[in-house]
Image 1 (cartoon, one colour):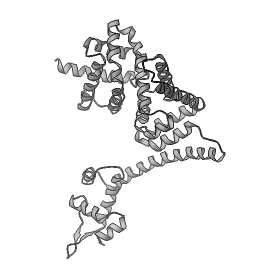
Image 2 (cartoon, helix red, strand yellow):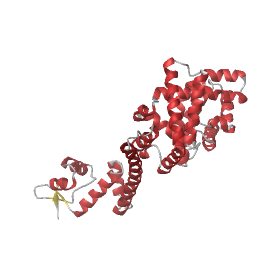
Image 3 (spheres, one colour):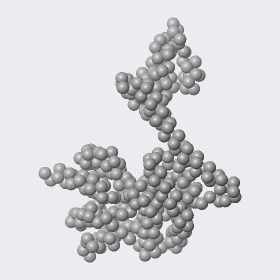
Image 4 (cartoon, helix red, strand yellow):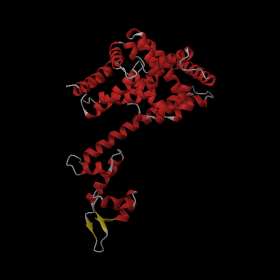
Length: 346
């Protein structure tokens, strides 16, 4: 049995133009042509088209799909299995969101206004999904919130109001009030993430990148920037046991300027570490160079001070707390930079 291109398009919901494009790039070449030259598709063509559409649902490019289908290992059984796994993942996420929204709905039906954390959790679930957190990470965050959500909501609201007052008054982030706010804010986030530095950076990234969360939390990028810079000034004092007075003067001049460049870099390095990428691989070498450049800039270009800061970061857990850098990541990036140095000075 053969299908003409128009009939196949109607039966599958695709456009004739799409099917012609698939033919042009040799992704789906019809098995036969009519006497008049019309494309004719048989059962095997339809099966291949199913595999193409299944793989498209997995956000693969047409070039990647062609490579899979032209490989004997890319059979239809494997394609179906991958699609089932993807659907299972979506079902778990949708089910968790549905459960939470039902609870919010019950509050609304009882004429109760849901708390900010109820709205926040619902919005995070809709906005993020697997974009920022794995299923296990989302469960960890939810368990932490469930443990102290009643205490967290007033604390979050109070800190947000305090932040807005400081911003409106033009209080410098070097001010002790700004630093106290930043330290309380960071303590709240560390409690929310159970002290997991990787989760902390993902939470930061989500709130930085998702405007829909800014209105809900009362903290937009300007507020996050203010907190980050104030926290940087607060953290400066932790370097005092490791540095001379001259070193500290240099840090006060240069350290804070690099603040906003660190979180995305730390996140990229952590992903390399989680992927077990070798420290001397091309991707990690590039990240280590960026890390080295930022660290050196933080020290005002002073290589001796730079070495002190790196050593302090590896040895002093207090310097790493709330930075997104745990002991494992510090060791990993330290090894990558050591390999860079040895290659430059054989």
